[in-house]
Image (cartoon, rainbow, N blue to C red):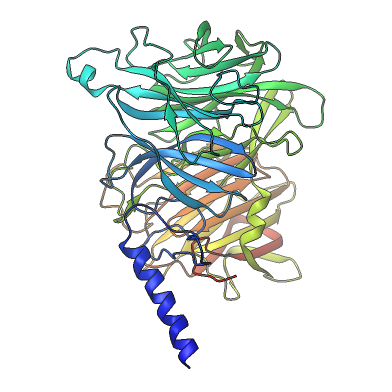
Length: 531
């Protein structure tokens, strides 16, 4: 009894210490095997979120020595946007995250805005040695003092380096390394090593286009070209670009993908992420098409970029976005924290006729946190009108839902899914064959009082065939929907006042057959556990 008492006392003391500590600390402490649970209303249980305070854009995503680093825009003193720092978290599996101390603080040159990080394997910068290559972070300085004078050249690029696997950072004494050429928006540098020219390439936002640079050492940069003044959408400012090669599925062909985030100007209002596919020789990017294509048609995926330095034997290009929209990000009804990330996604490239399609699918590591699978019924289910499905005890608010529909040659006028609670609050996802589009309706989703821009129906053009595959990840106040293996993706947030506990399928005009339906509990990445 005494041992049991001492054990519970130790657990209580550890939890109390965690609650009283300053700064984020929600994973394993040195010498123990405890993880701090998060139980606040609307807190995602398997998406990354900060321990407390404000978070926005993912930054500096780099893989090194078995660890995925996630840096992010962070303001530790409030739950609304403010002077920017780089927060930091580390994962060995893209699923479980360890909160680290703040990596980069504002200084006399300005706030620390978005950017990227790379491993300088050849030690081109001279900050390390080849046996211990430095991690280099390149980021935007936003100088508030210059801004106060009314000048527009407030943003420049600086670098910092780490020689201890990203645990501590030293800013380059000769910052900035790339001065402002007289542009109001000149930010979000993203760097990649280019084997073809044996130099670094940098792409950054320049208001309504991107500019491309090259460097032998990450310190001295030469302008190469620009792209975008006559391409894509221009309803807002271009931000957070990313440029990388990607092999075309089923071929030996490699194309370059340019991701460009924009705010506002998204397909359903506010912020969103567009992309272009083309060729890049280290000097100039030439797009195969200058039309607008969207990474995600939902309203809540922004500032997404990809991890650098993922090992060649892995070969994946992994994407992560900020799961909200600037139209209401500062006022969503969370209290201790604001901001969460999307799930990490594998990007792939498919050629259809003369067009290239960038597909997104959830990374395989998510299987690590699935608890159990329940097949609704072994035999096929025919749906006429509306049918409520048995959840078999699955927690709908922390789940992965998979459906395979057999539709035949003639589709119903509409078909879809409804998640609902006892108050009648609901989210509804529908395919309209009449309009040839998917629709996500959150007009009855719960609390929408915080913003008059939140309620509405998001749409995404799509032409469904004789079969339809849907995979939904529901986590507290968000859903990510992957259609036909990621050919189309929609990410949406909502704030239901009570948990959803009903799942309904409906078909109007003609019956549909559910060939397969699988509901999976997803384990919290923050839960208290002991190995």
